[in-house]
Each structure stands twice: as C-alpha cells, then as structure tokens.
Amino acid sequence: MKKKPLLSFWQLWNMSFGYIGIQFGFALQNSNLSRIFETLGAKQDEIPALWIAAPLSGLIIQPIIGYMSDRTWNRLGRRKPYFLTGAILASSALLILPNSPALWVAAGMLWMLDASINITMEPMRAFVGDMLSDEQRTQGFAMQTFFIGAASIVGSMLPYLITNIAGISNTAPEGIIPPSVRFAFYTGGIIYICAVLWTIFTVKEYSPEEQAAFEGHETEAAAKEGDELILNTKKYYTSGFIYLIAGIIATIIIYYGSWDKALYILSIGVGAYGILKLVTAQFYVGGSRTGLVEIIYDMDNMPGAMKQLSLITVLTWFALFAMWIYSTSAITSTKYNMKVDKAVVDTMRSNIQSVLSRPAIADSTKKQFETLQEDIKEIDKYRPNDNPVRISVNLSNHYADSTNTVFSATNKMELKRVQKEYNDGADWVGVLNSVYNGVAALIAFLLPVIARRMTRVKTHFVCLLLGGLGFISIYFFGSPKLLIISMIGIGIAWAGLLTFPYAILSSVVPQKKMGVYMGMFNYFVVIPQILAAAILGLLVRTAFNGNSIYALVLGGISMIIAGILMLFVKDEKDKV
Image (cartoon, rainbow, N blue to C red; front, side, top):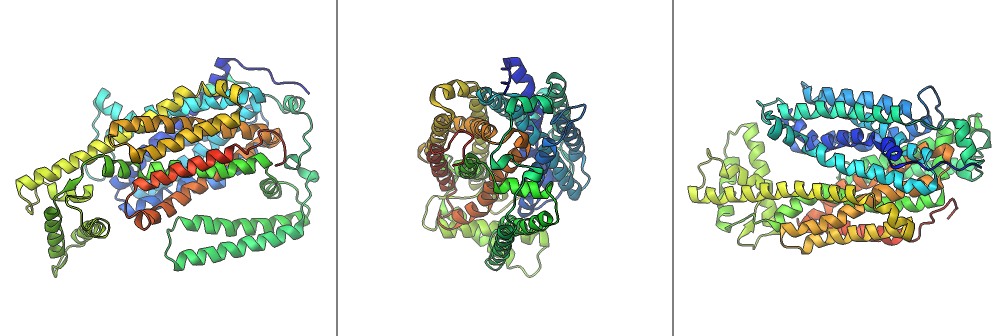
C-alpha cells in the first residue's frame, strides 16, 4: 500500500482556499438575513420559521451530495464538480437575494443559498480526507479553521466597511434593502465563486486508481458496498416500525403540549427515518444494493469513533447555539445598566392598559401595545420587587421617542440612556464575536503542533475545557471588557471543534465513503441547533426566571461534559 505524499504549506493553503467563499456566504447570511426579512415585512415571531432552511437543507442535502461525490469521477475530478455547482448556485443566490421584491422571494433565495453552500461545503471537507495522509489531516482541517475564522470577521463586517469606507448608505426607504447590504452581498457573491475557482484550478485530485493504491482494500462493515452489503431485513422492519411509531407519538405530544414548533423537525425526522428503514428493507428484498439502501446501511454501520464523536459534537454545538441565540440578551442585561426607577415602569403599565382599553384601536397599534404589555408582564413575573428595575430595549425605544408625550424630558433622557446602554452592549457583542473568530484563526496553526505532542484527543479535550470555562466565566465577569478573556477560551474551543472532530473522522471512516460519512456527521451539528432553539427558550422562561445568562452557563457545562467524553474516543480505525 502506497503512502500519500506530504503537501507543502501552500498546497494546503490552495486546497482550503475555497472555504473563504463558503464562509463569506455564511457570514453574510447570519449577519443580515433577519434584517432583510424584517425590511420586507416579516414579523419578529415569523423570522425563526424563515430560518428553518438552514437545518433542513443540511439534513437532507449533505448525505446525498456526499454519497454522489463518493461515486463521481469526470474531467473535473471527484469533488470539484460539486465545488463548482455549489459555487455557481450560491453566488447567484447572493446576487439575487438582496434584490428580492417580496418576502417569499427572499425566503426562497435563502433556501437556495443554504442548499448551495451545503453542496460546496460537504465535498470540501471530504476533499481534505482524500488528499492528505493521516499525519497531515489535522493540518488540513486547521487550515480550513483559519479561513473560517478570518472570513467570518471580514464577511460579518462587510456592510459596515462598505458604508464607512466606500461611503455607501446603510439606510433606505421602507421596504427597500439598504444599498450597503446589497453591495455586501454582491461582493460576497464574487468572492465566493473566485475563491472556489482558485481551489479548483490549483489542486489536482487523486484518481480512483491512485486512491485505491493509497488505501488498499478496506474490510470493516462501514466499507462494504454493492453486493457486499448484508441487511438483516427482519431487524430493519422491526426498528423501522419502532422509529415510525415513536415519531408519531412524539409529534402528538408536541402538538397537544404546545411545545416549540422546531421540535417537529426532530419528531417528524424520527418518523421519516423509520419509513426510510422500512423502504430500505423492501428495496433490499427486491434486489437493490445501492442508493437509499447503501446510505441507510452506512448510517447504521458508522465506525465506533464516529458514534462517540456524534454525542460530543451535539453537546459542543449546543453550547455554541446557546451563545449565538442569547449572547446579546445575556450580556446587555447583566453587564450594562438597563434599569430605571420602578415609577417609570408603573407609568408605562398605566399607559399601555389605557391604550388597549380603548373601544376603537387600529390593528397595528393594538399589536404594538400588546408587545409592550408582554414586556411589562415579564417584569411583573420575574422582577416584581426590583427597584430600580431592568426594562427591555423595546420599552425604552417606544417611550423615548420624541413624538411620545407620556414622559417628561427628564424621564426621556433616562430612557435614551437605556437605549444607548443596550446598543453599546450589542455593539460590544459584535466585537466579542470578532475576538473569538480571530483567536480561532490565529490558534489554528498551533493546534497540529500541540496535537503531535499531546495527541488529537487530549488536545481537543483541553480546547473544550477552556471553551466551557469561557462560557461559565461570562456569568462571573462584571466588566464587559473582561469578557475578552471569556472569548479567548471560546475561540480556542471553536478552533478545536472545527479541526479535530473532522480530522479524527477522516481517519476512521472508509476512504471510499468519506463523502457520505462527512455528510452524515452534519446531523450532529443540526440536531443541537434545533434543540437549542426549542429547549433553551423554555428553560429561560421557567427554570432560569427570564435570566438568559444561565443559558450560557448551561452551554459551558455542556461543553465541559463534551470535553470529558472526548477522552474516551478511540482515534483509530477500530470498532468501539
């Protein structure tokens, strides 16, 4: 069996350069899509439903694209046709999306953008496993981590830079997306296609014959394909019915319990997996050995280390989604002074009740004041005896408005102070996000060196431990500036989780199924996203008494548990 040649630094650079484009797409999407939806008339409670494209696209598309790319070889190569297809579609979506004339068009373009990013991204992760020997894979994924961190910073800041450097306006008439956002998306579309083309033209893939010579004949269950597959159809029928019934029962419980709608994705997904197992067994009996049969077989026969990494990944990404959902709320409410005298809140309550009790009230006004009333109810529920008492930015924005006559000039000055505190805090959260991405980009090159001394498993344990402590420290640090220390720990964990799980995974899965298993691994990134959106809101409202800072503490505990579990991972091709 031949050994893959070691690649130079610049060869590793070229191989992962396309990730700049992918991350620009993600950064522009994550930073601006809610703003675009709201501009086009989406209501606040509709935005999460519009964002559901991301997890659904990843769940469905990545394993299919992975399976297809494992079996592709043409003039462009094995993975490159998918790089190019995804890049063309994603760049087109980035150019069209900011010109959407209506909300439904923007929502459709988001689905196209996210699906296209997935088409590019999954084969690009498998590409590292294809091109590098085991001893260089940590370096290869670390290079991707560097590009992810660096591109995240620039991509997120792009509208700001376009406004402040190019002088392009960041405001527009109602219903029109600001020019700065449009030009940011145009720039991102160009960068996306150019970065991916750079990787396509500067890196030559190994042919199937060369890969076979490098890897030899793999015999573990996960490597079997075609006529080698042996399915216990009785077991598949039984487990299929169990999954189907469990999914139906869970869906009914979610419906009658009025639980978060995001949980439907999980319950329906469990039921759908049961149906797929039943269909797979039927296809197998009918003589089929490829396509769906092979994908479901592969899912059931994941290597042992991949199963271990799946739980670790769920716990780790749960922590990150907790931060992305609640960091602004947690930091502004605890590190910045958003409190006013209780008498101000009493006046707000009286005014809201007065307006809502009018016999004739416009629907828009009614909805506006009902939202304000919910904020007052939150104060009454969680902070009834506080004085001064923390208020929401929604209340301060409404009553500090120059056209509002409820409060005196002195009280309005106090409410404007609360506005400024919130906006200063929200701006600082943006800075903190840049800090952890910057740390990840810088430390990425150190991780392979440390891993050679400590092993990948132990190095990732340390990364996750530091990240978990970083999350928990947010609760204890009083000064916003000290949160930079927290973000350093989180940045180290971010670098680790973008590097080590994929490096280990690429070492334990069969080479000829690198794509499909990389795609399946994405399930364990999507599942915690759904769980975080559904469960954390319930916990904040009940167990945490409205204090979102505890969601970050819970995220830290989750990440530390993931780190401990990491110590039990077998970083080798071995059944656990």
